[in-house]
Image (cartoon, rainbow, N blue to C red; front, side, top):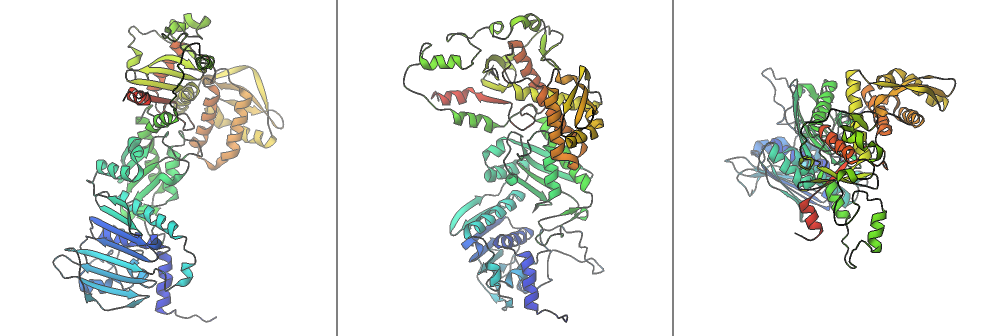
Length: 619
């Protein structure tokens, strides 16, 4: 077939198809134009999912009549400035626009009308219908300066594109999400969104900075995010990462609460998303996702924003540096959070309570007898709590526990030097242990409330953190098995475990091949104490089969380390003495990340006295 030049109208519509995929992408381009024009107030209206009508009004610096005519011409832009030699550096892009050439693209597939006034000038407007441009004419404008861009009948000139649009409701949701993203990145700009004549979003301008940004995020993501967000602000080699990330216990079932921005531009970049996931690898299960809003500021020379027609993806010159900054900054913030757990944990607990009224509650009633039989071990009567030494479970260990034993490595009780003066544990963040319920949950009292601790989840995190520390120091203590244990596996599983023998040795686990489909275990980490070797090796084999070499070495070892910690921690159902419970609480307070287990579940719930008073109608 012979080569032909396409008509200009066809060229414009092809270009428009790359930039304007749906109404939300048209709105994105127009809002970014308003932001580049210095707008402090942006109003967005959309009818029929944006297909019938779109209006973007701003108070930016506007355009003079001669600029209006240029604005709808292809390859005309205010976003790139040539140097003295007339050359344009396409790598140094400091604006949000340029790639899209939004106005001529939209004008080629819709009915476009632009009305604008520059400061001190008169208002004018220009109209473009399906690529046909009308002359600039005087017009009325409601403000001293700015622009109003109205788009009607989007894609009327390309009817085939309309067949691929989703429902009006879906398109409206995409528009709302786009405005939310733009509002997150520009807290100093006021945004209003009207959908089909109904105001769905009204955000006043906030003071630039961390406080204003968090206030804007709270308005968009909810007060729960504000209460459970950690401030991020780190720099490395001229690159700055700022924003907020949620506590691990404030996680989500999908990545819908992850917002990433590069130089104020919202992006969906796999490198950034992978770094975010890697930073939380120690704290969340694979099916949980952190909530975060992160802003990366980088010299435009070190990032290419033109690798995608809609500017949704970017490419970094040094991706390893960017990934390292994100992972390091997030882990630093998580470490600083200590044992803090999200406030939503307590809210969910309170929501689960049901008020009971009716028959009086007495020690001899059927309900009280069922309550006593359910495993509540902290009190022996209804009138008073028992003393610490009366809590069931002390038994023959009581003497050595009272002499200075506490939760520690290997066996739950490990010797330490008694303290000369012991502060009242009720003044500690997690309070003083008062009871153990169902052999699983520790109930502690603080000055202003109560704390309920999952003993298995809490100790799992403590063991895990100690294993990580020892591994980082290269000094994981091992204990030799009296009789080496043979673990029968599938031949492929055995090969995978043996192939990682050197890496497992770093964790204190010594394995070697033992014929076809079997592994011989000679030594285990001392932290695990008397552990289920068979179950441990099989779980490790499953981890390696699932993740294989896809994870980085540290992340792969982290997976195995977490599996070991789970096997070596205090099991649910084990009765603990009062000193053991208090020792566990004190170690939680001193251990980073102890607010959640290795799978992202909370290790404790705190209920303030005010919450309890509300629960019982006292306030």
